[in-house]
Image (cartoon, rainbow, N blue to C red; front, side, top):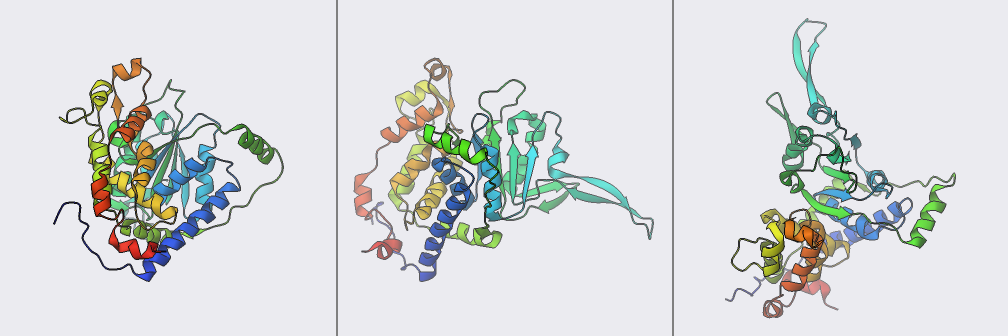
Length: 361
């Protein structure tokens, strides 16, 4: 059997196909509800919801006034989940995020004991607003929560609610008095989403919407249990071998120390992406495929999520800075450079057999 052959699988259950349709319907309803408050920013909203349904964290970067905080708050309103906002400041302490232990006395017995008071991290959606305005010691308080989905205090583990998302914002232009996130923490974010300026028509709509007494009401679309079920559906979406190979090759091509690294990577990149990038490329591509109502992952899905997955995992060098090249420029060039093995795609029929019958006709 050749490497390009896809292992036959059983036909999909009707429940799974119906769940994909439910997820697409939920996505459209969420977009509609958020559209009551957020004008434009369709690509940003899609990437934000990809992170939610792929069970990942998201970092939104944009200049002030682009509704980054409002976008996350509106998402929380549209989901029947608990929500806390943490304003990161230079004097914020780790215990202000995770919680702290205090001594309490039992009035009946007079016995004193430690009790853990939970911090704002104990919520389904945590908005880490301007996350780069607090020192590294406090930023690190999020590491365990983002990776292990738990908080350890006094030697005791406290599980965070499920689902759990850290949605952080950052201002790219005001760097005085800020603390850049270390690479280890950046790697915990599944997607790095760039929030751009609205076009002229959208800006006119924003002005009309926000300068009247009208206050749009956002309806609840999904509960926590429904989100968990839809996250499982995303995980079940099959991926053909050639798509997995493409995602891995795309990630590995960012590493300058490999023998087959492209020349421009050696010239402009100091450090490339790790294996987590390959995992997130496939997970994000799965979520994107299902949100668009597809039953399989395509190369285009991987390419569409390449920038938000890779841009914060590639460290460019002085040569790139001198020539004005950003990580996005490197990713764009890689997407054009890394070939798709047409033979593998042809051999596998371009999609796994699991969902071929679903797409027939």
